[in-house]
Length: 66
Image (cartoon, rainbow, N blue to C red; front, side, top):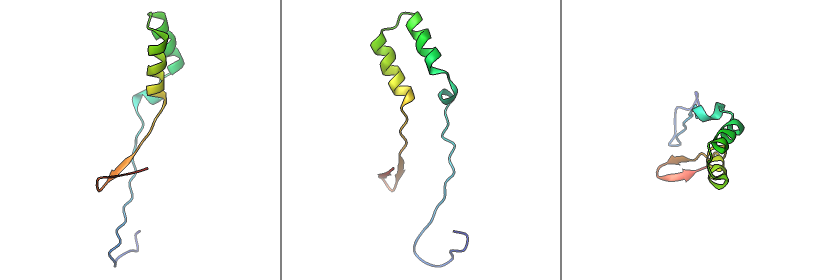
């Protein structure tokens, strides 16, 4: 990419830090805490599915890629 000087083709490089605070949490412990305070098992399961499954997409020129 450093040597490209002529042409219509464009290039771009991105370096993104997409880590979140919840990436470092012990979710097994959090599930136990939610269980101890009396939350329903189904609700705990839904919350675990939400925070443990990650999906990233890139939007460029109004089109989703990846």
